[in-house]
Length: 363
Ligand code: NAD
Image 1 (cartoon, rainbow, N blue to C red):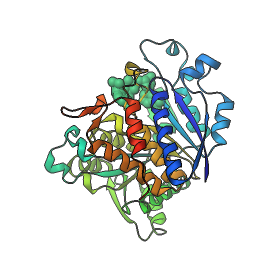
Image 2: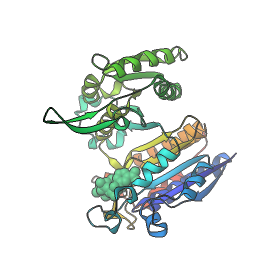
Image 3: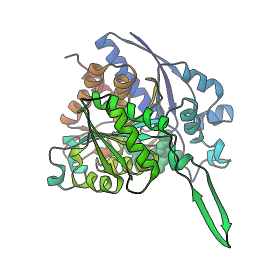
């Protein structure tokens, strides 16, 4: 099969980690008989330098015309870069908002997986970690509190700020469908997180999620209140498979879940629209402090590439091969600086890419 991928290397370490991911995807193509065709576009600081804006309409059209988008990272040293001496809508990160909006990406998927080999980086006690954890957080990305009407004004002589949290049933249904679809590819459990004891939007959320669940009889649905979920993540993370939640709860819980894995260079993510189209990117930023030094850990981006294979192209076997290759390289003791521990082999960004690509096999 032929697949058309828009690549956005972006700024900082972005070009290095995207290069290594394409190396791995190309090896997947060779081993499994697929062709990946790439079109590169500019976004972020590099687009500001070339065109004066963080994302051009033409670049967005190129992304729309492809099967999926692979993004490195955008942005520079915020305290020390000419890109930040301008209005917020002209800064590098405005490109991210523009592309997410332009591609209608409403579903954000962030896995949190603890590699046995990196367990010492997990801040939780051994008895809590147990056999490890492997979850994904499905966060609604375009509704709720962050997009509701807001204002600050004086009421009876007192400054008062108002933010509104709105969800309609269509917005809830489409994200719930995504969560159940993904649960079908995993351990078939969805924990839907809300605050239904207080919020109307959560009560509607719960009702619609229960309706969607009827179409997925093999998936077990459980409801959990958000405050309990925040505790359960650090008390018993192994219980979670797919966590489904609204925008603000997901924002907070996905950071909490990332932190218990202990290593920012390992965390992949995807944002999807109603079809199988998605934008795949690491959860970390452009790391300007190590840019251009071949020191970055490319694994988060490579694992984002595996998510692309699984969720946009339905290539589950190929995605498994990438994830297993990453696991094998870690088990053999190779580490980039960010995940280095004594007694391991310290590798560069490009060496990690080579090692992972070499271990892609068809089982
Ligand atoms: P960051 O994630 O770029 O870096 C935080 C720390 O983690 C740094 O010490 C960095 O060296 C390290 N790090 C990050 N990724 C790594 C990797 N793959 N391998 C090894 N070490 C890694 O966060 P920041 O410093 O707050 O932000 C830097 C720039 O990135 C800013 O301009 C910010 O706006 C931007 N940013 C972009 C995105 C994105 O493109 N989606 C996300 C977050 C931040």
